[in-house]
Amino acid sequence: MNENKLQKAVADWLREQGYPLEMRTARVFKRRNWFQHQGRRYVDPTTNKEREIDFLAFFDDPEKVRPIHGRLVIECKWTPKKPWILFSSEQQSLTPVGHLMSTPMTDTAIGRLRSLAANDVSKLPLFSSIREGYALVQAFNRESATDAAYAAVHGAVSAAEFFAREMSAANGRDHLFIPTVVLDGEFFRCGLAPDGEVLLHPTEMETLFYMPAANGRRDSACVHIVKESALDKFIDLSEATFTALRALLRTKSS
Image: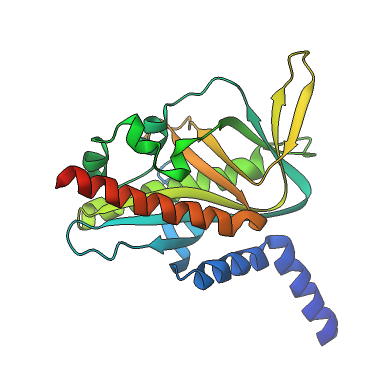
């Protein structure tokens, strides 16, 4: 294989593995002035094996007194020919407060956020109007339709919980770790019409209510799934959420 063919083969392999999506996503966060760590290692609590999360994005609190730091724990998935489908129903498993409190966070953050009521959470854009989905699949996979989607969600949640525990043990500061999957591919929300027909709606941002079967984990977590095309909008919502949360908690403590 000559050098040009080798380079093309390597470039094709990199695209198939989704590395360009990771780099493009990192570039967006850099442009938005978020600090980030790429390729962070963590220990999966369900397998006790070391794994890698694509990256962490940091929205730190500039205040020195009882700061509240925001983190997005991100898995990137490139799926050009196999759309992802989020299944939804009219019934919601959690209240808005429940959606917020299911987020992996340090122990001290849990204590502070317990003071929030439903009216407070309505001021937090990422959690104020969640229409949670109950399952996520990748289309056109006959044998294991949930594998790729499940692996991405599981990785984001497991890493978020690992970092929350690690930070709790290290210094006890207030950190939230929001599990997030960035998707380059088609994305649909699926529901059922009154006449029983399947309804598919193209979508860019959704939230999955994830309930793991394994022991040693939280009961549930909300995972934000975002198309690459909506990443800037999601960052806007994240920044507004962390900023509003800081203001709410400081008002309650004053």
